[in-house]
Image 1: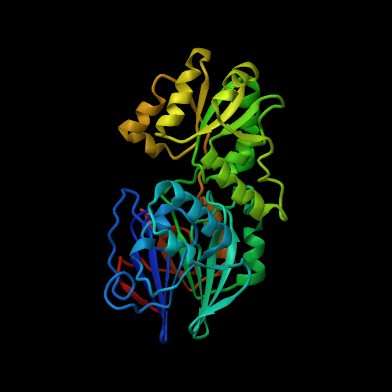
Image 2: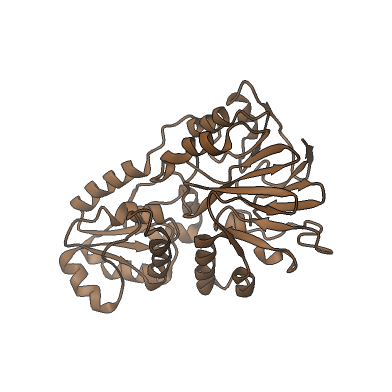
Length: 384
């Protein structure tokens, strides 16, 4: 078997991993870089004559699906069912992707194996800041590769990670592991539940609150929505509500976490009622319509909670968005902390580890004593 990390060996985001076995060739993720770069040429996948049996997406974040338009039309695409619906709904607003291409995506189900050519693929649902995220167990030629995708254990659904690996994955040959938080530090990470508790206290103490977070970070929206005191409004916009409805329907038979009870979308008819009773309203960073709404309540001195990666505020237009408001930060990472990565390594006992989605791959050498860590470069072929 051969593994090629086309991009992601020394950077966060923009990942693309290729796995070959015999006459079968698959790709896992094809993402746009965090700086917005949209170019990655892969012969037989994005250029030339189609020579790839499928492209699988771990989840719907742009740094993993952002280059879906560049995949040659003869090549099949695969994603989770909810991810596919979310991609289509996102695209209704952004028009970033070809709608027909998104609608052509074949869907898979967590825990159910399927084959692409000679390669057996088993997707496992993982906790991440994107709902319906997956890691993939890849089997061929008597060998096992686990591609983690983006994952964590400190979210609402993270407790099952270890048991899934123990029961269904066990010892593997190669671990292709994301390492976004691997940067030499071992800071304690706030759990999503602890954030929920902090949000409950914050919303009880402040009558008017705007929460800046991603419209697709459904765990974060649930953490705040489920913390809103009785009598206050839970508000978003119509686009966000459509997104919430997808997750509500997809998760209904498994959990009530994503019921988003009493969530409504903003209209001018709500304005006076919100001023009277108080509210928690979810807004998108940089959105002019949302900023206008925020300013309309400025005489009430509303609180603004920033619940996203702090790096976004380095952009001047984003910093301007919150200028003049009282801002507090309440956030936790969508990615695995060091201890969780070490647990995955321990439980899978890989012969080889290939770090991806990280700016500090060398740090992986400090996370294992028994596995060989291969520090490959983009486009380098690793034979196993």
